[in-house]
Length: 394
Image 1 (cartoon, rainbow, N blue to C red):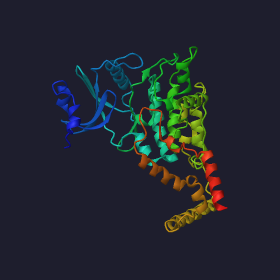
Image 2 (image 1 turned 180 degrees about the vertical axis):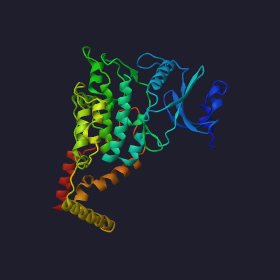
Image 3 (image 1 turned 90 degrees about the vertical axis):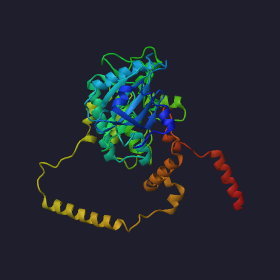
Image 4 (image 1 turned 30 degrees about the vertical axis):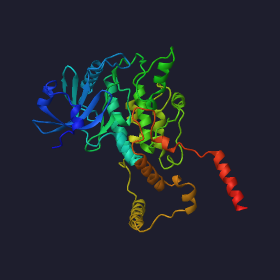
């Protein structure tokens, strides 16, 4: 058994204050902290099962963007979680306790943590893994939209991974039950994932507002980020980033997108459509060709093509067997002039960079790993060094 350290034990609610929670659960180590909450691993005494307990301090007088107190916004989140309960890709709320100063939300425990942390370790995902994660995410989004609920804060930090690396959509603090015919105008969410119509609703008096389509835009940003390891609209200056979002100004830049096929790019384009009326719904996105399985039923047998295919398979297996002992030829000139262009070296460089900089990404701010690659050589200094080199050669 791992007991909480002295510092961790100091922020635990008094047992007399939260006796109902302590009667059923034994709190363990801290898993994460928020502005007014702490998440701890806890063990149910009767069954021995592990859960994650979100302990929310409701004693303060802080208010959210809608003027709701911490207690009221937490109770609203509980109601939303009850409405969307039962879906395999949405976090399960197991238990709720409330005292005069704390609310305890007991969730299922996802031991593999956040998708954001997983992505930081692996840099980028393959198309196959991206397909699996996005299919699950869009199924979860389709489900909550069918309940007329908009999440409004979809991002990798709010997607957890369970023991089998299936996703669990979490953090419904900004979620809201909406009327599809009524526009919403509250500005909420994370800057890099905000949809154009949400930004316009907060900037212009005559704006139509936004609705459930903002979640599909965020899905497009997430899918882009999963495939290449950085988001489509990031910029050091936040106002430039917001302008790029409103104009839908992004690109499939080289070399990161060179090895990615056209189908995922097409799906991203259709989710990152500036006009919400022309943007795919979650149901339409799931029917996109990117998620479809190609079958061979109904084809006639062709002996020649089958033999040729068999020979290709044998040749491929022989090459794979020899690949272990045959290093890939690498041009020294290319490696010296532009090592980031080579996919193998690029993954090594990115992986080393993240391990060196580790926790330089600040949660809640409009910053991310893209900053690591925003550096550009200063042309003035480059010219000076070139002139010095020429003088020294003469």
